[in-house]
Amino acid sequence: MNETSAKKWLIKAWHNLSAAKFLYEADHYTDIIAVELHYCAEKSLKAFLAYENKKIPKTHDLEEIYILIKKYINLDEYLNLLEQISDYHIEESYPVFDTTIPSRKEIKEALDFTEELFEKVNEVLEIDKSEIIN
Image (cartoon, rainbow, N blue to C red; front, side):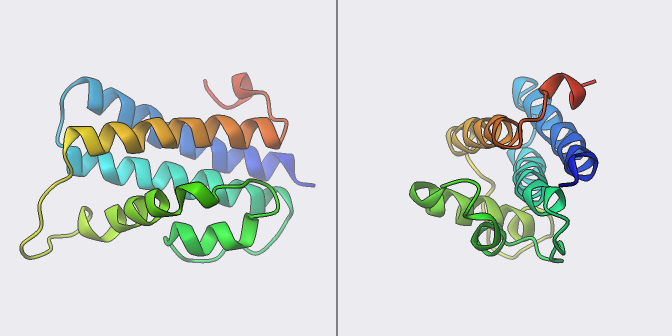
């Protein structure tokens, strides 16, 4: 078990989550918040792989990462949301023709899910959140 490595991933995930929360409260651009949420979810899921000293794939596809860590956490009922948040990485990070930015309602749903995911990962890995949030 590599708790130190998992904590490093979760610290970075927290940075993304806290930025997303701050930007949401400031009524900032939802496309920017979406990217922060994507990175938080991605890093939170990859923390399981880091904990187990497994190879961390160079992918941003949350569903692909989820397949690798399903034994730790069940997100089957959230597959559509994982897909939606994965899409944020491409659709909101780069200029894409004829796309609309996510609504505040959509971002709020993703924000709530991502925050719960972050909390659950810390809980499952038995990592004290006070060691992550500083």
